[in-house]
Length: 204
Length: 231
Image 1: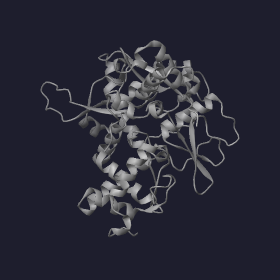
Image 2 (image 1 turned 30 degrees about the horizontal axis):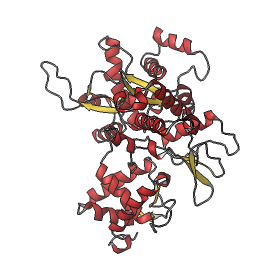
Image 3 (image 1 turned 180 degrees about the horizontal axis):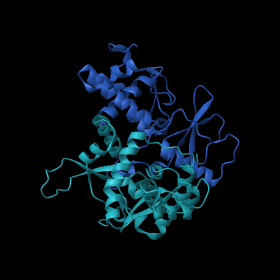
Image 4 (image 1 turned 90 degrees about the horizontal axis):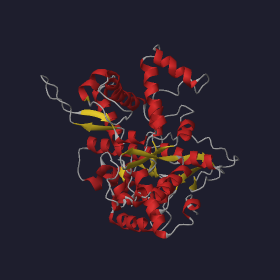
């Protein structure tokens, strides 16, 4: 499975890439779009912007913007590192970060037989309740602090979209790249996790 | 969807394709430079040329990090366009802390003549106490910044060098493995930016400005542009 990494530098969510909908996409524009995605995560562009070569175009449900996500062949993804005996990227607080992503997956992928992206929004209370089940009992302050830190890391890396003002969370466009076999594993994980509605404190 | 890499890979056999793609993935994803011994696509000069062609298609280039080790970085022309709008993905505090590490670990030793070469990865470790003394950030924020920079491979932790007659220090920092990703031109530009920032009135700074010529490109793109050329 593609490891969630927070090594990507912070992406500016408010900023929409200046790629014009009508501009023809030449080799250097394609190279620049890939480089922008490498530097700042998935590109947020006006709806109707053509996808540069090799990039997946994911329209937002609202219809006015879309995400562009680079897609490499499966034989060239991060799994290669393990096959070659190389270390993977360093992850801050790997356990809490992975558990929080799992909690978001459980809350925002309502039907695990449906496509994973865009999924639905979930209130942060539901996500924190599932996260609490996965981490086990903790002091309330420590629980909240570790959840917020993990939310921030995953949001900055494009694995989830956190609307801090609206206090809602969604899966990020990167999850659309997970392959069929990865989704099979994730469905099993999904079924093993507690249903958000069954947990106390899950309602906002 | 057809892969962006098809123009390079179309006429090759399956084994060659796999070796090229594995080497491509290794240099792009590995936090450290990749020894060519572990990937046939880097060992073999013909396959390595194809790896470089794949990287070129997506704005990247193959960088030799040392004898027999390889990584990837941004193409110089693409890095210039990426940083042209002054955008920078790192928070301001992280940029400040990283600049302190670069100055104390590499720039000062290089100026003093104790460090040669143009690498930004080797140098004199900067003790945490030095960072605490020089930064205007509260200790908690400095620690968080260092945590993020470390996870991003922009700094690394090393045992502090013991100086005779001093109390052993806890932790010290050097620039991280991402600095291997700088091309020769990017390494030179980083050095020039630090000279322009630290000694704008020196003859060396004047020579740099003269060589770059007038216009927006000749004025400097900011002293922290280099982060975008890494990762």
